[in-house]
Length: 174
Image 1: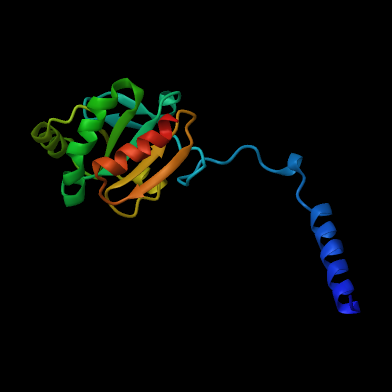
Image 2 (image 1 turned 90 degrees about the vertical axis):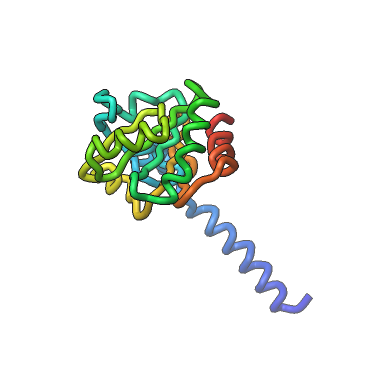
């Protein structure tokens, strides 16, 4: 073995030792992640009034998975995925909470649309799109899959089909 091999091996050993000795201690790593609209972070809490006039508070739904769908009546992809969301709400019942947050529309417009599509899951209204901004919604539809502990596990931007929705829910039910 020539001296360059020895220098290379020593550099690897001492360099690896230095990296190991200077790593962040486990006690210094953050245990709690701040709420933000990102995967593996707690979902930001909010309170909105539903189309039915009830109050919807996200934190009151801890303990069960939540599929949080941001949508609007004028959005074509939103319209196409509504039957899939309604079927999921019927299929999963109380095991998974399907929530459709309408963005920026008046209640009568939304009510007419909900009646037309026979939607039975809760529809909170976000007329000023404050919650949409809080969740950094940049396009509709956008869907957040939130586990029973309140942690976002997946974000889906765009239209979902039944397979995409079923896969997201299956991840929450594990």
